[in-house]
Amino acid sequence: MRFPAWITALTALITAAVVIVIAQAVLQPNRPLILAAKFDSPTITPNADGVDDVTSFRYELSRNADITLSLRGADNSEYVFRDKQPRVAQAYAVLFSGVVDGYTRPDEAIEGIVERRLLANGEYHWTLTAQNAAEAQTMDGTITIADANSHLPVISTFTIGPSIFSPNQDGVADRVDIEVYLEQPADLRVFLVGAQGQEYPISARKEGRQPGEAGRQMFDYEGGIDLNAEPPPDGTYKVVAVAQDAEGQRVRRETDLTIVDGGKPLAEISAQSVGVDVLFQPQPYDDKYFADAKTRGALVDQITDPAARSNVSIVMPVGDMLVFMLTIENYSNVPIRTTGPTPGTVYQQNQVAASLGAFESPGAWRVGIQCDTSTEPFPYRWAVGSPDVLIEKTNPGTGEVFSYLPAGARALVWGAVRMTDIQERQNPQNCWAGLIQEQVEVSLRNSVVGQREIRLVDATAESAK
Image 1 (cartoon, helix red, strand yellow):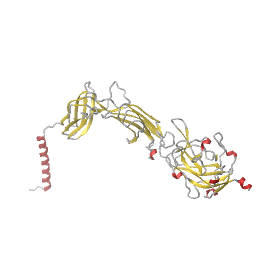
Image 2: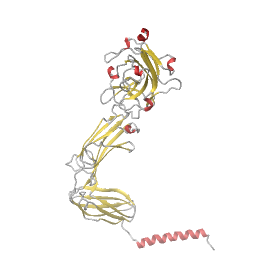
Image 3: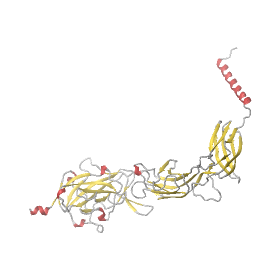
Image 4: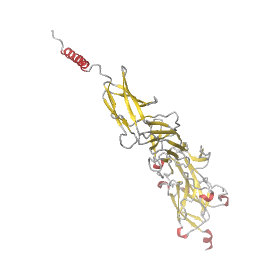
C-alpha cells in the first residue's frame, strides 16, 4: 500500500525537526543564560583627559532576556547603569565611563533633576542580571573608579519671565527672557516641550559668553514670529534646560510656560472691487475740531458722499480739512493691538501724532496719512477701529488694559487733516494712506494706498486779484 506524497513529505519534515532539537540538546546541553560578562579594564579614570576615560563592558546571552547592570559601592549604595533592558541572544559590547543613572547624596540640595552622574572614586561590585519568563541568572565582578572629575554641571539659576506669553507681535508679553547660570562648563540646551513630547529649540543670545562656558547664559524666545514662522499652538508647555559636561553627567531643570493668543498678525487696507480704496473729500474746518495733548476736539463725520468714490484730483481751499475714510481687515487668527487717537480725530497740518499725546507704541497697529510735504513718515495716525468695534484685554502681568481689533474683524477708519500750508514747489501734492505696525514694519502692500493728488488754493489771494 502506497501513502500519498504529501503525507510522506510532512512525516519527513517532522522527523527532521525532532532530529535538530535532539542534536542541539546533545551538542549544547544546559547552556547558561549568560555565557560571559566582564569589563575590558579593571580601572578607569573618567576625567575627560582622553586616557582610560572609558572601558567596554562585554556580555553574551544564549537566550532572549531582560538585562540589568548595577554597581554597589563600599557603603552599599546601589547605582544602575542598565535597568531591565530587553536583549536578544547574541554578544554585546557597551562603553562605560563611570556615568550611571542620576542620583543625589543625602547631604546634597541640588535644584532640578540629576539625570546622569559620574560615580565617585572607589571600588564597585558590579552585577549583571539576565531574566526571562523561565529563568534568571547573574554574573558579577569589580571595577575601580579613580581620578574622577565628579563636579556636576549644576544649573544654579533658572528663571523665565513672563510665565504667560503671547507671541503675536502686539508689543505685550511678546518675548520670554530665560536666564541660566552654569556652575561648571557644559553643553547647554534650552527648549520647549509640548504635551505630546514635541520639542521647540530656543537659541541663546550671543552676548559675552561662549557656548559651553560656565556662568550666566541668556535666552530670548519669541515663538518664531520674528522669522515669520507660526508659534507653537496655545497651551501650557515645559521650558527645559539641560546641561551635560564632558564626562557625560547631565542635569535638567524645567518650569511651565503658557502660550495664549499666539499667531502671526496679518492685516490690510481692504482693496475695493469698485471705486477707490481710500476715500478723500474736502470739508470746511471749524474750531470745534481742534485737538492737542490737552484738548479732545469734536470728531469729524464719516464720508457719505458717493462722489468721494471716484479717483479725481482734489482742489480745496487752504485752511479746509482733507477728510479720508478706508476699511481695515484683520485677516489673521489673532487680535491686533491698536492705540489712539480715535477715528474721526482732526489734525492740524503742522501736528504729528505725538503732539496729540499719541506716542509710538511698539507692536501697535495704526492707520497713517502721509503727503509729499510731510516731514516724517505718516505723521497723522489713528486707531484701526472705533471703540464700538474694538475689544479690551488686560495684561495679566501689569494690569494694563489694551485695545484690539478682533481676529477676522473689519473696521472703518476715518479722520482729517486741516491743510494750512501751501508749498508752491509741491502744489499739487500727493497724499496717501498706510497701515503701520509701529516699530515692526509698514508692509509694501500697505505702504502707499489710495494715492490722490491734492491742490491747495488760497481763496483770499484769488479774490484779491
